[in-house]
Length: 289
Image (cartoon, rainbow, N blue to C red; front, side):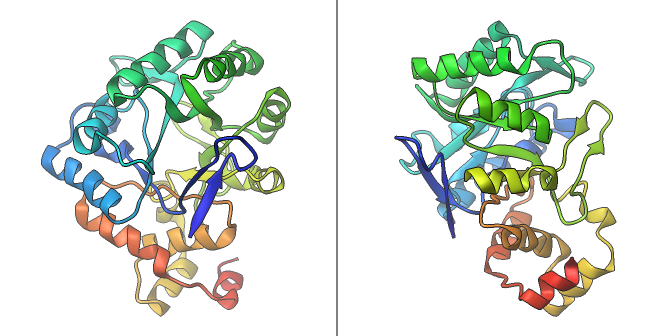
């Protein structure tokens, strides 16, 4: 199963529909080095060897931890590997998340990502929104599109966006992808300690209309504790885990969904990858709702 990013552009990217999100490779609270560095590196190598060619990262994971792990494990990169990073936020020493989204901030983040990932151009960058920061979306995206014209960025996406923000973004320029929180049990906005996270279901139809891949994040963290008995019942039917059925559900919800389940354990990575083999019937999907 493949999906095409920026299908109408001069430089479309085709990737497998099951990617890998690197955030869980960091230490506790998405801060610091991994508890098991050799395993973290092996996870990245194993994922790519298994056919995963879409990695999601950010220079504020760690900070800079996941970018450096990716470069150490995989550079020089396979020609079909797409590394997607995010800008628009940073971390304080108290581990809080704050906007870092002025044009100057965004340019500094892009330059840092290029350096730590050892790239001359980043194939896909998500502008992550963190609520009302005081910097208009048009100003933020304007800076992103300027760097795209300069060749530092190939494609621009949006992350953590409301439907209204996505509609505005589409008026400002080509939006390649959208990355929002989304899982079987978490489909609409959820309030986390640092920011509200709009749900994937709020923008899915708009993404489908424009041929924009929707990339769910946190799908195995915030959704599964509240998944309920239905997901467990389908897991038993398919001799699978609840996490695997959650991934399979996302894959069956729309051909425009590109899940990126993350983990810090090699065994869980292998388990997650097997979710792409699960075939949910129309009856299964109707039962899940």
